[in-house]
Image 1: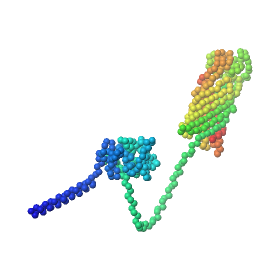
Image 2: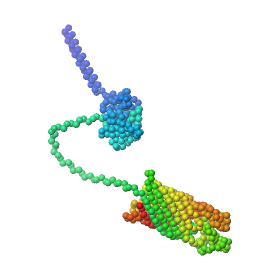
Image 3: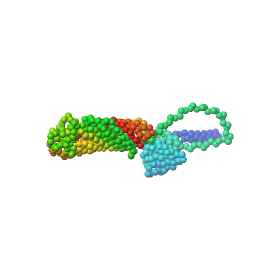
Image 4: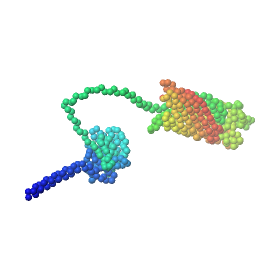
Length: 469
């Protein structure tokens, strides 16, 4: 009996020991078991915040606070309000700008719904994916949390979980009452001299050009129905241009005026005679003054007239005898252009007007287009050039009143040309003055269209002075 009682005591002690062993083992296993990250719903990923598993079913820790991440286009997005409030920040919403503002001492973050940009402490940084609304909650790329609040963020793909750490810094170690003596100071190494950084060039302020120039044309040569290459005199040119900004672009207004005189030669002197008398076979101008001479003839006084096609069809003659006289022509074109290239290349439209002082020719005009490069007068030397094409320059011509013109006498017909006007030149700045020297070469080519007596070519070198503002 005594032996049996002794055995029961040993069995009871063994049972207590075995129970304590299993309790201890169970506690150890509970401490070392890996955290349960759960199984996230479709498209969502749990978040582990400061070693606290904030994601669990149900999906909401509290009302309207989804603590789960989603993946979009390879970027992890997390709920902004929930995560920032976990870190002690204040979150506010600006409905007018659709922007969320997060503030915390030492940090300020602003994001806008649908805009791939985050502003952190006043600095804009791009985002791969813009903030969006997910299940009624604003979610932002994970990088906003880490860069905006200084948190440590890590994605564990094998666990499909986002780890966020935002632990407060430990209290500072108290300074001992008697600090140990500092080690003997050693002289710091002499740093190697470093070359100063190169100066950063600063952009020069934009200069809008404005100028006028007056030039003299040297011996212009003229080819037309009254001049087989005669040299011109009293030839001048005045031009100017101004640049101005408008609506984010740069525009140009420019103008060019030319005038020249030249002599029409003839072998016979002018004579007034009655119509139908001997040697009075032609009529010129609106004054119905008949002139001597027969045309066609090698005499340079024989001139192909405006609308000669109609006269040839009437009486077989398309020329009239014109005694010697001094012809004068002047033209003007105004231009409006928009800059398309630097420095100062423009495309534009232009209007052309021309006046004659002889043979009853009408004033003609038309609209055209072209391009030009303005001079750079803020430089000592510069080049410029222009070319404009006017497809139809026209006016109304009235036939002289004459019995020889039959039904054409006094009729009004259209006179038209296509005109190409061009110039190329250079400028030389005269020191510190606003003056500059202007030299170049220019001219125009007019091809006869309707009722024109011939084509026209005028060319000339020129030189003069200009003034820039």
